[in-house]
Image 1 (cartoon, rainbow, N blue to C red):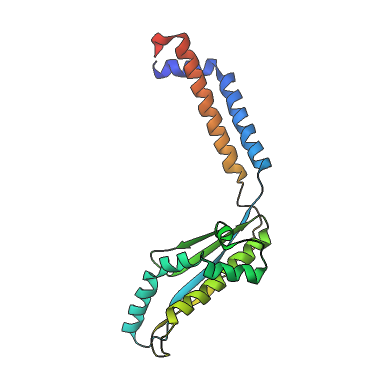
Image 2 (cartoon, rainbow, N blue to C red):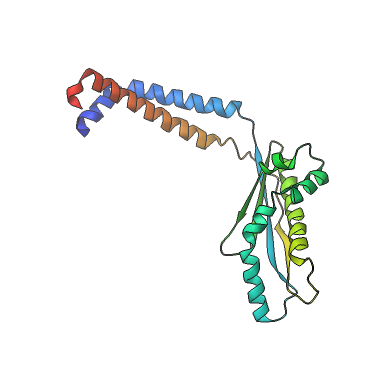
Length: 205
């Protein structure tokens, strides 16, 4: 079946394709309506070297901090941090459950960490993100500076961007879900028309 014939088949069966698209959109709309809205907020932390006087020490300490970013990322979702967040905010959850609400992003070119928290309560999401950021700084400083003298390089962290209460939910995403439903419906519709034509006229394949 050449392209011209294929397009002709689709045009003759446009109603079936349209019906499949409408069903896909309806299914996507139902998913959106039945889903619980979730909000996310992000707090940003800058880690840097402390107690550094010379340029050479600063370069060494800066490289050290950069190399530790993945460690700090992992530390953010451990009970050492999350137990304190739960106590601080009075959350009715466990560290394991809370960890599923948190995502942490790092960069290969700087020492910034983004802590994103998700919740069905938009204000709670912002509070959790800020609390995790604060507790992570405390945990990192305690680990990295433990046993070091006041003259030795250390690590410090500061929140450079507090979490903002979201205006709209992060999920479900209505435009994205509807687009997915449209594409799925179109795919099913075109596939059904093609299969129907081939079954009626096997020699056209």
